[in-house]
Length: 292
Image (cartoon, rainbow, N blue to C red; front, side):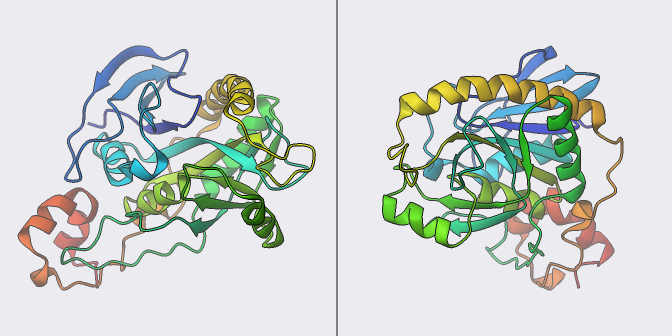
């Protein structure tokens, strides 16, 4: 039986979920090592959640140090089918002011060498990623933000940078010229791995600053970000409650079959260790022959 229906990943400023009942902590082992922290399981509005502090409680892990594979695999192992990822971002648009919530539907990768796939080591798979965000979950979150009376902007391009330093002015102005909308350091890898794990995934990007392009806000400081993080965290808790209220019982999107026909490797050629490591993800296709 699944231990949780919905996974919640908390970014900077969101290290716990208020209102959880019947709380327990679970450490999950994965073929890719340890997740960022123990998963906090609990019930909220009648639904079982698994919460993970992306950077660990106490904010101990840099974006480049995150074990994205372990974090997503752990949610899958707990039975999660939908993932709501809260993340602090900078704004590259005048109209996306601090404390606004953005629901991006596209990503642009500016990271360097991060692992963003479960595959390799003898197994080749290519998922479709033209639309990286689950459309069903996107609509649910948009309605939830509106119900929670939180300013929300649906759609947009999230540029994922390496960090941990913030942008230079040259970089920030370049991203704006490319029509990118918000900037963060974490969510692209999560989205790719969630798709490979056949999980619905949505990013709730919480704006904390104007990056460094804005003439009236020409530097990003931690103090400035923390002030907005506090307010954003309060809004995130309200949005989550509304999301659970509006969430349909069953998925009607195609996220749950993302790997169908995506695995190119001949079943007989898959190494035994890789088969064991990936059984949770691809086992159903290997047994039915739907990987061709």
